[in-house]
Length: 191
Image (cartoon, rainbow, N blue to C red; front, side):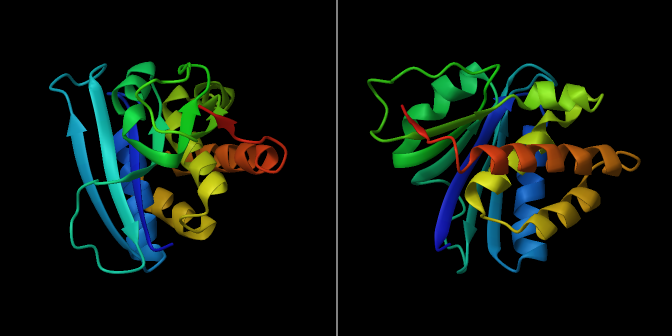
């Protein structure tokens, strides 16, 4: 893995920070890797822009902030507009397909690989829209392999509110299955 820089971005209420916590905990505690997490969010409880920035590495991390974004998970249109141009050339862009429309960006780096998932709709199929963030974590896991499936499952069970473990694990499985089903047959679009 060397070092991978990842940003999960959306708006308050989508569980962006929790998604970052789950991934960081899975890497650092259950997979034995190194991870840092920083957060950014507006003063409003819901609706304002927020993001979680992670640095994951096999080696100790000397600087905890993003310097070369490898992966962007955009769960809102604003997140794509705000952070899409920060991706490295050839970077990976994962989007909430029903909330984010991606157009070629004149200010964006070349060769961005784009994959989308209807995370909110898949969460609604489970009867709980609030788990769309964990659907996205499953999708990210399938598309990148950054953290092991077992580590993510342990981190989910350890991080979500008590009583919601089962629906969150089901959401993770739904995102993982969607990603695995689309990975070999859906070539990444170039943005």
